[in-house]
Length: 228
Image (cartoon, rainbow, N blue to C red; front, side):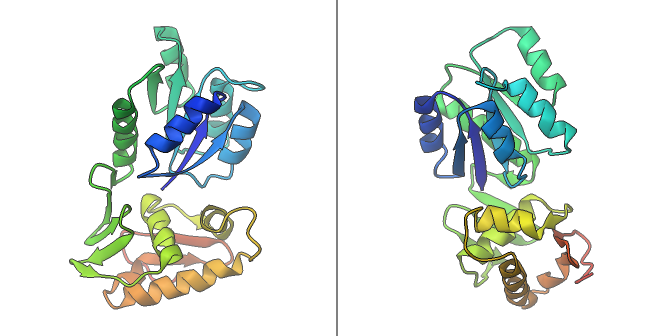
Protein backbone atom coordinates (compact mmCIF):
# COMPACT_ATOMS: atom_id res chain seq x y z
CA UNK A 1 0.00 0.00 0.00
CA UNK A 2 1.14 3.55 -0.69
CA UNK A 3 1.55 6.29 1.92
CA UNK A 4 2.37 9.98 1.38
CA UNK A 5 4.09 11.76 4.29
CA UNK A 6 3.87 15.58 4.13
CA UNK A 7 6.04 16.75 7.02
CA UNK A 8 8.72 19.47 7.00
CA UNK A 9 10.85 17.94 9.76
CA UNK A 10 13.13 15.47 7.87
CA UNK A 11 13.94 13.52 11.03
CA UNK A 12 10.28 13.00 11.96
CA UNK A 13 9.39 12.21 8.36
CA UNK A 14 12.11 9.54 8.21
CA UNK A 15 10.94 8.10 11.53
CA UNK A 16 7.36 7.82 10.24
CA UNK A 17 8.60 6.21 7.02
CA UNK A 18 10.62 3.66 8.98
CA UNK A 19 7.77 2.98 11.46
CA UNK A 20 5.30 2.25 8.66
CA UNK A 21 7.71 0.44 6.31
CA UNK A 22 6.33 -3.06 7.01
CA UNK A 23 2.91 -1.99 5.72
CA UNK A 24 3.43 0.93 3.37
CA UNK A 25 5.66 2.08 0.57
CA UNK A 26 6.07 5.73 1.53
CA UNK A 27 6.82 8.87 -0.46
CA UNK A 28 7.86 12.07 1.30
CA UNK A 29 7.18 15.76 0.74
CA UNK A 30 8.67 18.52 2.90
CA UNK A 31 6.45 21.54 2.19
CA UNK A 32 2.78 22.15 1.46
CA UNK A 33 3.07 22.94 -2.25
CA UNK A 34 5.17 19.88 -3.01
CA UNK A 35 2.84 17.73 -0.89
CA UNK A 36 -0.23 19.00 -2.72
CA UNK A 37 1.36 18.38 -6.12
CA UNK A 38 2.21 14.77 -5.25
CA UNK A 39 -1.12 14.12 -3.48
CA UNK A 40 -3.03 15.37 -6.54
CA UNK A 41 -1.76 12.35 -8.48
CA UNK A 42 -4.43 10.52 -6.42
CA UNK A 43 -2.48 7.25 -6.17
CA UNK A 44 -2.13 6.92 -2.39
CA UNK A 45 -4.02 4.82 0.15
CA UNK A 46 -3.37 7.27 2.98
CA UNK A 47 -1.76 10.68 3.61
CA UNK A 48 -0.06 11.83 6.81
CA UNK A 49 -0.28 15.62 6.75
CA UNK A 50 1.41 18.07 9.13
CA UNK A 51 -0.45 21.33 9.78
CA UNK A 52 2.50 23.73 10.17
CA UNK A 53 4.21 23.57 6.75
CA UNK A 54 6.21 26.02 4.61
CA UNK A 55 4.54 27.62 1.54
CA UNK A 56 1.07 26.21 2.26
CA UNK A 57 -0.25 24.90 5.57
CA UNK A 58 -1.91 21.52 6.05
CA UNK A 59 -5.43 22.95 6.18
CA UNK A 60 -4.92 24.61 2.80
CA UNK A 61 -3.45 21.43 1.29
CA UNK A 62 -6.40 19.38 2.49
CA UNK A 63 -8.91 22.01 1.38
CA UNK A 64 -7.47 21.92 -2.14
CA UNK A 65 -7.55 18.10 -2.23
CA UNK A 66 -11.19 17.85 -1.14
CA UNK A 67 -12.21 20.64 -3.50
CA UNK A 68 -10.67 18.60 -6.34
CA UNK A 69 -12.63 15.50 -5.22
CA UNK A 70 -9.52 13.66 -3.99
CA UNK A 71 -10.87 11.72 -1.03
CA UNK A 72 -7.69 9.89 0.05
CA UNK A 73 -7.89 9.34 3.84
CA UNK A 74 -5.85 11.97 5.71
CA UNK A 75 -4.32 11.73 9.18
CA UNK A 76 -3.34 15.23 10.35
CA UNK A 77 -0.32 15.88 12.59
CA UNK A 78 0.04 18.93 14.80
CA UNK A 79 1.94 20.18 17.81
CA UNK A 80 -1.21 21.97 18.90
CA UNK A 81 -3.77 20.32 21.15
CA UNK A 82 -6.48 22.96 20.93
CA UNK A 83 -10.05 21.94 20.16
CA UNK A 84 -10.29 24.73 17.56
CA UNK A 85 -7.46 23.18 15.54
CA UNK A 86 -9.19 19.81 15.56
CA UNK A 87 -12.52 21.33 14.54
CA UNK A 88 -10.86 23.19 11.66
CA UNK A 89 -9.10 20.00 10.54
CA UNK A 90 -12.28 17.94 10.50
CA UNK A 91 -14.20 20.75 8.80
CA UNK A 92 -11.84 20.72 5.82
CA UNK A 93 -12.01 16.94 5.53
CA UNK A 94 -9.49 15.26 7.85
CA UNK A 95 -10.21 11.64 8.75
CA UNK A 96 -8.23 11.63 11.99
CA UNK A 97 -5.94 13.76 14.11
CA UNK A 98 -2.72 12.98 15.99
CA UNK A 99 -0.95 15.40 18.35
CA UNK A 100 2.87 15.51 18.39
CA UNK A 101 4.79 14.02 20.10
CA UNK A 102 3.08 10.65 19.63
CA UNK A 103 3.94 7.00 20.19
CA UNK A 104 4.73 4.81 17.17
CA UNK A 105 2.08 2.32 18.32
CA UNK A 106 -0.59 5.02 18.31
CA UNK A 107 0.37 6.14 14.80
CA UNK A 108 0.05 2.56 13.51
CA UNK A 109 -3.29 2.08 15.28
CA UNK A 110 -4.66 5.28 13.75
CA UNK A 111 -3.49 4.24 10.28
CA UNK A 112 -4.96 0.78 10.79
CA UNK A 113 -8.33 2.28 11.70
CA UNK A 114 -8.32 4.49 8.60
CA UNK A 115 -7.40 1.61 6.27
CA UNK A 116 -9.94 -0.73 7.90
CA UNK A 117 -12.70 1.71 6.94
CA UNK A 118 -11.61 1.16 3.34
CA UNK A 119 -11.91 -2.62 3.73
CA UNK A 120 -8.38 -3.58 4.76
CA UNK A 121 -6.86 -5.03 7.93
CA UNK A 122 -3.33 -3.85 8.62
CA UNK A 123 -3.09 -5.81 11.85
CA UNK A 124 -3.44 -9.05 9.90
CA UNK A 125 -1.65 -7.60 6.85
CA UNK A 126 -4.60 -8.83 4.79
CA UNK A 127 -6.93 -7.21 2.25
CA UNK A 128 -10.10 -9.13 1.39
CA UNK A 129 -12.56 -9.05 -1.48
CA UNK A 130 -15.24 -11.74 -1.46
CA UNK A 131 -13.25 -15.01 -1.01
CA UNK A 132 -10.06 -13.42 -2.31
CA UNK A 133 -7.36 -12.59 0.23
CA UNK A 134 -4.18 -10.60 -0.33
CA UNK A 135 -1.42 -10.73 2.25
CA UNK A 136 0.37 -7.41 1.71
CA UNK A 137 3.33 -8.46 3.84
CA UNK A 138 4.13 -11.77 2.13
CA UNK A 139 2.80 -10.62 -1.28
CA UNK A 140 0.66 -13.75 -1.64
CA UNK A 141 -2.92 -14.14 -2.83
CA UNK A 142 -5.55 -16.85 -2.40
CA UNK A 143 -9.13 -17.53 -3.43
CA UNK A 144 -10.96 -20.17 -1.35
CA UNK A 145 -7.51 -20.73 0.24
CA UNK A 146 -6.13 -21.76 -3.19
CA UNK A 147 -3.00 -19.79 -4.20
CA UNK A 148 -3.17 -17.48 -7.22
CA UNK A 149 -0.09 -17.14 -9.41
CA UNK A 150 0.72 -13.43 -9.59
CA UNK A 151 3.96 -11.65 -10.35
CA UNK A 152 4.92 -8.52 -8.37
CA UNK A 153 3.17 -5.90 -10.46
CA UNK A 154 0.07 -8.05 -11.00
CA UNK A 155 -0.16 -8.28 -7.20
CA UNK A 156 0.24 -4.50 -6.93
CA UNK A 157 -2.49 -3.95 -9.53
CA UNK A 158 -4.91 -6.30 -7.76
CA UNK A 159 -4.14 -4.62 -4.41
CA UNK A 160 -4.85 -1.19 -5.92
CA UNK A 161 -8.15 -2.38 -7.42
CA UNK A 162 -9.28 -3.94 -4.12
CA UNK A 163 -8.47 -0.87 -2.02
CA UNK A 164 -10.46 1.23 -4.51
CA UNK A 165 -13.30 -1.16 -5.34
CA UNK A 166 -16.30 0.40 -7.08
CA UNK A 167 -14.08 3.33 -8.15
CA UNK A 168 -12.77 3.80 -11.69
CA UNK A 169 -8.97 3.90 -11.74
CA UNK A 170 -7.59 5.52 -14.87
CA UNK A 171 -4.70 3.90 -16.70
CA UNK A 172 -2.62 6.97 -15.84
CA UNK A 173 -3.34 6.58 -12.11
CA UNK A 174 -2.46 2.89 -12.21
CA UNK A 175 0.71 3.57 -14.19
CA UNK A 176 1.87 6.36 -11.85
CA UNK A 177 1.21 4.26 -8.76
CA UNK A 178 2.78 0.98 -9.89
CA UNK A 179 5.45 1.99 -12.38
CA UNK A 180 6.17 5.49 -11.10
CA UNK A 181 6.31 8.91 -12.69
CA UNK A 182 9.82 8.46 -14.02
CA UNK A 183 9.38 5.07 -15.65
CA UNK A 184 10.65 4.67 -19.23
CA UNK A 185 7.72 2.52 -20.30
CA UNK A 186 4.26 3.76 -21.38
CA UNK A 187 0.71 3.39 -20.06
CA UNK A 188 0.05 0.59 -22.57
CA UNK A 189 1.82 -1.71 -20.10
CA UNK A 190 -1.22 -1.31 -17.83
CA UNK A 191 -3.42 -3.04 -20.43
CA UNK A 192 -0.95 -5.93 -20.68
CA UNK A 193 -0.88 -6.46 -16.91
CA UNK A 194 -4.65 -6.09 -16.57
CA UNK A 195 -5.12 -8.74 -19.26
CA UNK A 196 -2.68 -11.12 -17.59
CA UNK A 197 -4.27 -10.52 -14.18
CA UNK A 198 -7.67 -11.40 -15.67
CA UNK A 199 -6.27 -14.66 -17.07
CA UNK A 200 -4.95 -15.66 -13.66
CA UNK A 201 -8.26 -14.84 -12.00
CA UNK A 202 -10.33 -16.57 -14.69
CA UNK A 203 -9.51 -19.98 -13.21
CA UNK A 204 -11.56 -18.94 -10.19
CA UNK A 205 -14.23 -17.02 -12.11
CA UNK A 206 -13.04 -13.74 -10.65
CA UNK A 207 -12.07 -12.14 -13.97
CA UNK A 208 -15.71 -11.07 -14.33
CA UNK A 209 -15.35 -8.57 -11.49
CA UNK A 210 -12.80 -6.40 -13.29
CA UNK A 211 -14.73 -4.01 -15.50
CA UNK A 212 -12.96 -2.22 -18.34
CA UNK A 213 -13.88 1.34 -19.28
CA UNK A 214 -12.43 1.50 -22.76
CA UNK A 215 -9.92 4.29 -23.24
CA UNK A 216 -10.21 5.21 -19.57
CA UNK A 217 -9.32 2.51 -17.08
CA UNK A 218 -10.58 -0.28 -14.81
CA UNK A 219 -12.81 -0.86 -11.82
CA UNK A 220 -13.29 -3.78 -9.44
CA UNK A 221 -17.05 -4.28 -9.02
CA UNK A 222 -19.18 -6.28 -6.61
CA UNK A 223 -21.55 -7.59 -9.25
CA UNK A 224 -19.41 -9.25 -11.92
CA UNK A 225 -20.16 -7.00 -14.88
CA UNK A 226 -17.48 -8.43 -17.11
CA UNK A 227 -15.32 -6.49 -19.48
CA UNK A 228 -17.68 -3.57 -20.15
